[in-house]
Image (cartoon, rainbow, N blue to C red; front, side, top):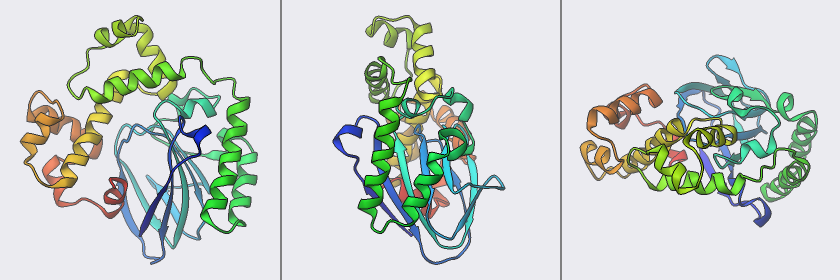
Length: 266
């Protein structure tokens, strides 16, 4: 398996965390679990392999809504996947839908974004070289962005608010965050939900969970220290949140970390 990251161009840097190319040439079947990341993804399947999510075959162009629980996946065949990973609040800029309706499912990108996605997929299949493929994808995204009605004037503010929540790993007090930005806690909840598809509380829990995964990947401190460093009140709260996102306790996860999730933590 190979997992390679590529940076976006300057104009898309505020919206795209990175592009990635996932390749698996062994052809062997395997099963795994996708955990919540806080980011939405659009994935173009360019290989002969097939993916299933919770026993439903994935489309050629996968649009992953926000994931709030563990989702089982399996695959067969050789894979070449070009993925776009959006920032938590930027996926909404490219979509007309209420993005919370996309949560916890893999959708056909063509159904959500229109028939032009199918045409884009065909162009990618016939285009040699990853850099050329990314150039084509970027042109497509820039066109959507320029025409998007949902290019919110609050985009930058939401980004600043989310960064504030990420850097504070302890339990976030929404009233304090709202006061810092001169808005009510009710409006804060509405703003974040509109742009991320998540409530502020769920978003913060997912980012804290992701931070715990990064600490666990280092394998250089006990779980009690990780719970403390991630701002959990005690280890019981850490275990409860962790299990809701993975289906496993932290100790069980450490014994069974999968190849795909190892790659995603790079």
